[in-house]
Length: 381
Ligand SMILES: [Zn+2]
Image 1: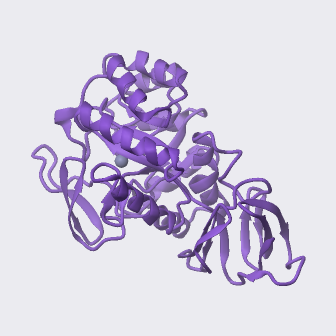
Image 2: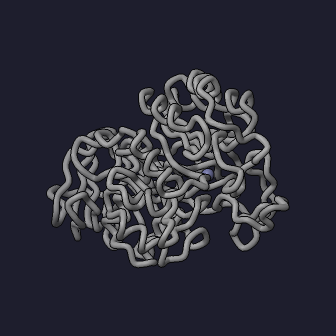
Image 3: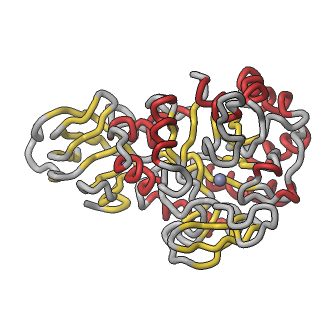
C-alpha cells in the first residue's frame, strides 16, 4: 500500500495540516490527520494535496481538440489536461452542422468507452445567435427532437450535458426529454429573461454554462439568466475563473451566491491551452491568441469577442485561490461538485476512503507538481 504524508490534505471536512492518505491500488483506503502512521511514506511536506480536478467544459488543449481531427488528436487533448491535474474530463463540442456533430459524438463515444473522457458535452447547436460568443451562428438551430435523438444515438449513452438557450421554440420539450434520458440540461449562450430561465429550471434544467459569459447580464429590474440561475438553489453554476473571462468581483459574487455546493470551476479550454500565442481553430471559427487571451478573428457583429480560454482547470483553481476563495471551497468547485453533476460523486471528486485515488499535488504557489489518476502517477512527485 502506498502512503502519501506530510502535505496539507484538502478533504471534504477541511484541511488536514499535515495529513496522510493511504492508497489501496486504484482507490483511497484511508485519510487521516497528523504524521504518517507508518514509515516509508512519500514525503509531500510543504505541498498541498487536492482531489483530482473534474472539468465539465473542455474543447481541447496542447494543440489538439475534441471538435476536429482524429481520435488520436482527441486522446492527446485529454492527456494534456490529465497531466495537468484534470483527472476527469468531459469532451465539449461546439455548434456545427448536424452530420458533423453526429460524427464527432460517435468518435468521442469510443473514447468514453475506453475511459479517456467521462462523456460528452454538447455546447450547441440549440443556442441563441444573439449570445453566440465564439460559436458559429450559421449552424445554430431551434431545439429539434429528431436532431436531439440522432445526437443521443451517436453518443451511445455518453451524452452527459447539453447546453441550450431556453427562449428558443421547442426548448421546453427538449429539456424534458433530455432530463428523462439522464442528460443534464445546462442553460447557456442564451438571451433568455429571468422568467424564461426560471421556467426552464422548472422544466428540468439544472446547470449553467459559464455563468455571465454568453448570456443576458444581470440588471436589477431584469436579472436575466444570470440572476435566475444564481438565485435557484437547484442549479449548479460554471464559472471560467481564469482572470480573463470574469472580473474577480464577479467570481466573488458568484461564489458567495452559489456557495461551495453549487459553484463549478471550468476551463472552457481550447486547443491553444498550453500553446504559444498564434492562430488556432475553435470549431469552424478562427481564433487569435495574444498574451494568452483568445479572441475571434472575424465576426462582424462582435469584433474581438473573447473565445474559449487557454487555461487549464489547474490555472483556474490557482486564479480562484489567488482571488481569495477559500481552498476547501475551490476544491469543492473544481472536483466534488462537478463530479456530482456527472453522477460520479460516489467514484471521484474528493479525498475520502473508497473513492478513486485521483489527486493533484500542488506547491505552495498552487502550481501542480504531481498528478495521480486511479492510483497511478501520471506525473510523479
Ligand atoms: Zn465552451
